[in-house]
Image 1 (cartoon, rainbow, N blue to C red):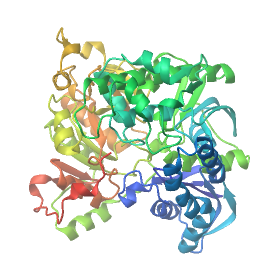
Image 2: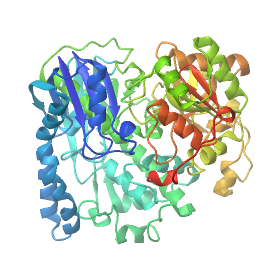
Image 3: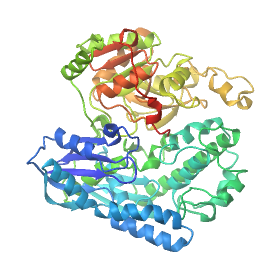
Image 4: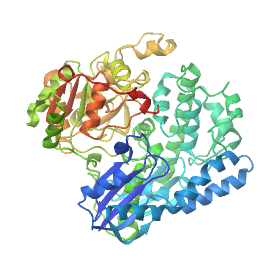
Amino acid sequence: MDILGISAYYHDSAACLVRDGKIVAAAQEERFSRKKHDPGFPRHAVEYCLAEGGIGRGGSLGAVAFYDKPSLKFGRLLETYMGTAPGGWRSFMAAIPVWMKEKLWIPMHIEEELDRLGVKVEEDFYFPEHHESHAASAFYPSPFRKAAVLTLDGVGEWATTTVGLGEGHKLTLLEEMRFPHSIGLLYSAFTYFTGFKVNSGEYKLMGLAPYGKPKYVREILDNLVDVKPDGSFRMDMRYFSYADGLRMTNDRFAKLFGGPARKPESEITQREMDLAASIQVVTEDIVLKMARHAREVTGCDSCCMAGGVALNCVANGRLLREKVFDHLWIQPASGDAGGALGAALAVWHNAKGNPREADGVHDAMQGAYLGPEFDDGEIRAYLDAKGYVYEYHGERGERARRIAQLIAGEKVVGCLQGRMEFGPRALGNRSILGDARSPKMQSIMNLKIKYRESFRPFAPSVLEERVGDFFEMEGPSPYMLLVAQVRKDRLKAPPANVEDLPMMERLHLLRSDVPAITHVDNSARVQSVTAETNPDYYAILKEFESMTGYGIVINTSFNVRGEPIVCTPEDAYRCFMRTEMDALVLSGCILLKENQPEWKETKEWKKDYVLD
């Protein structure tokens, strides 16, 4: 039976195709539309998933699953507006027309889109609740036969956090916290106040935190949020405007923290650094309390996580280090995009009662490589037609050696190979690679390649068997969702006054023998790589290790600031030529910048991308 899962109309819309419980394809709409965090109906992603599953005109689907219950969410909005009237009038007038035009007619929209494609739905439409979809995306692809399931995000219909139990094919949500009290919205409020974009810049806040000191923790706990021992909490809504306005925080919040919110793109001050450090500490403490409570409630020694807050890899790393659970698995597409996957799996297993296989070791995500791929024939035909100059290396080992040689020579290499990743992390198939040993590579890649804030760290990809050689970490981290400390024997001694140095001076200090991936607190967001999951990427790392003795490279997503991660060879070539990247890998084809014809733009391309 084929089940199409869809998430849409909030942010990061996506589609997924599940066939008899196996994930066939999954992708975010933004990768096709080139509009970052695209919230619209995922027309292109649906078309891709159907094509990948061989479902063409005249074909059929067993069922369609949408990732939340629109009518229940609409009821929450109306109840909230009535409870805050007349304060929420502007927000009400902005939201209601969209609901009346689109969101209340989702089944009809889906049917219209499928009719356009000539595809019929044999059975029915299903609408799991938002957090059931998150929980299903966490438990069903996980390796565990039985596990606690923890979901944390901004808000679904009413729920903002849930504790559940997964066992066999059954998934039961046991407890929930409800809007407006939300760990995700609390973190987003600080994202907004420090000048970053909500639902996009939260990871920047996390990256900024190590530059500051958690001096505002007491103010947060005394004024904004009352945290209980089980991790549940209540927020003092007098400081927040998201329930009844168009902003996250208000003047009372600003007065508490010494002045108005930072304006986007303005200078980052010590206040913002300290606010980031403070809310990160509070978030970690709440997540740990919630996790301990989940273990107590379920009696499980394994845990699965999803929801936007599950992408806070610093909190995840602490959860792992403190051994709240013996085993932890986090959905790589934890945000709303992953809801499409969870909705489809919830229908197959929970609604229809179909059995589920789990061996306790391997997950069912296929490395998250669930998107489109392009073979050498397609790529060479495209390059030849355009007159772009390339070397061809069809054999994996030969290609890996050439790429490793470029990286070892401090070249920045864009890499498109295999199936595109599902979720926000590039995991080697839509990545920009660099030498982690280079003292200058972090600044080069931020300023000349990504065109983004210089303080932001880069993540490493490391051979799984070498993780312990570089990091204080036990076990794999295949999805770049865990932060670990760089091993002490690799660190350089810092100057005595390091904590008092200005931000930019701290940024440029040499902290380890892999300085390009070592953050200011000596941490790194780790991706472990195996030959089983991604043989092409593993071969590159292995060749790099043979040349340098280091089985580790920088891995950042193949895009510039404000742009979705590249999907196609054309997307990749365009990004390659717009930046100061040195080389481009398109499967077996390797292109050097110096050999390419002159690149001409007809307009200022950066204006196409809204800064995140």
